[in-house]
Length: 246
Ligand code: MN
Image 1: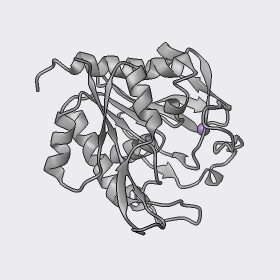
Image 2: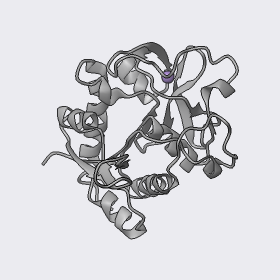
Image 3: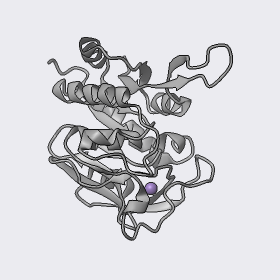
Image 4: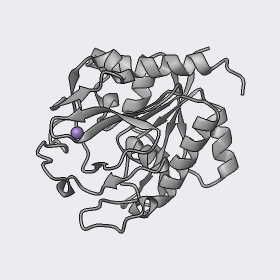
């Protein structure tokens, strides 16, 4: 049996058509294809508000991917909304935080992407910049207006990180974010930074596999072998934990 990888879902809300405002649970297909290419079996974990259901959703997977999406509600890290905050979806923040809490409690590996790194950091007590323009000397274009599978800016890895074992000193990544980590959550270390100092990856200290990146490896995995290795490494961790009883 291949490991089962749960991918946190979001809502697509119809803007017109027959049912304006109608919600659909979804994830982008790139996540599905990357998990399959890495040897896992993907399942969408739909957003919901039932804590016991969320716990069982996590119990039923071997690893958790936190997918991209809206900005995190700033009240969750103690700030008022600033001018350049994007769209928020606080119900999903609560859902994702519960997924994270249960995944850690049940010792399931976590791989967080884009919004995922942000909600992960906030869940463990870190903070965010609500917009990159609020960072001094943030000079690199982090929200590229180029195709999704084009890697544009460089990231440099810390030699102590898990990611260093995959990428070495540095690699180039795509970039579609307007926020970034401010204070790193206690118990986490910075694993990668861009050339302007913006945090691009964090990892949990200790043995639990909790790796988070600010870029979108799922959009690159079909053409960049190291991005596929990033997924394979996570899926292999999920496979290892499969037999561990809780
Ligand atoms: Mn970036």
